[in-house]
Image 1 (cartoon, one colour):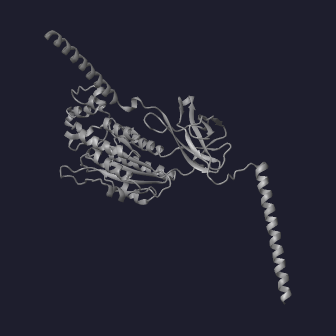
Image 2 (image 1 turned 180 degrees about the vertical axis):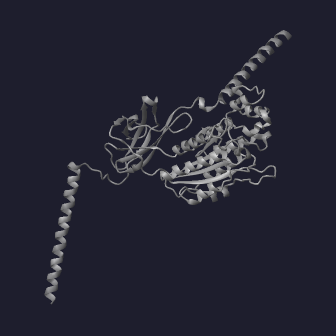
Image 3 (image 1 turned 90 degrees about the vertical axis):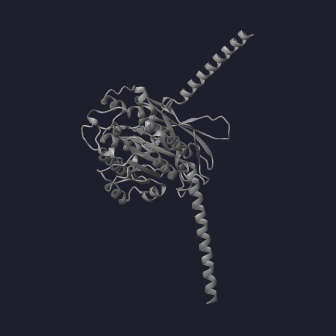
Length: 453
């Protein structure tokens, strides 16, 4: 009996261990970065509708949510079908006479509200080790911000920008420290065309920085500000809401509970899915920093994880430099962007920082495709599918179907024959009858007036 019980216990224990292993494997798979499953995609929304003339706004994004630009009209395909009733099968027909609008003729894009969070920690006055230009990171960051503002102004985009420095004086010895809260963000939010924005950029200090890096709280405040219900409800369209975080470091406040702080931020991101967070980690990569360090034996795989950021802090650089001044938390910055559909980039010099902001600018724009809806009738609904087929760019994508509703007012884009001729004839006849009636009435009044004289 004892032997049977021992055997049963053995198999039960073995079975539980196997189940536990499977559970752990499943959990690990679930925690793999979402980029492994990411694909190129198309986002389509309805833009301007004037009778049967439809303008669609189309964004084509790569695996990292970075806009794919340079596509031509021949790279797009459109198909449409009338929606008779819900659930019915639709027979799609190609649209061959659509146009890709040029920048000068595009309809105005939706408004955008952008909060730029700029790290003002002490390490921003240093130079990236392998940057041949020897430009301080703070100077490169300011150049990138100026470039972003110029691009917005040149394209006359309806964008408001809040330029918000961040940095915590945890030592009590810093000349500059920058708190971030929703009130501060609200006071700084101004149209991109406002000259005060240039003054704010010019007033950013480029030396004597010493603040510590607090990333998570400022991002939380920016996301809460932008995501506050009805804050931008005066608009008749859904505005674009973006946070741009430029930092050269990692969250260094209460590092012992970093994970708890990060997942508190994640909860805020989940509560405001309409806000995108775009991150730029300005500095050298962790593998490059490891290779510069002395006896720093950390694998590339570990350096792609949050644990790698903690591990590399224990390494030492030749010459006695503090390695913590050079750590860019690529894993966490990537996670922030991925969870919100934003972009994550890691510039190593001033030129790449400028390019990073140009990429975010492109995400504020879209392709605009214009076509006449075949057989359009007032108040009817039509389904349209946009596809991209560009062999040269190795892109082949289909967007989710979009629904277009023709306005209730009667279609005025009638063909010349016979509709416009019929309308013209009817209008002319009505005008003739009205004119004759008025002249007869006028003549009658004149006759009656003469009789009384």
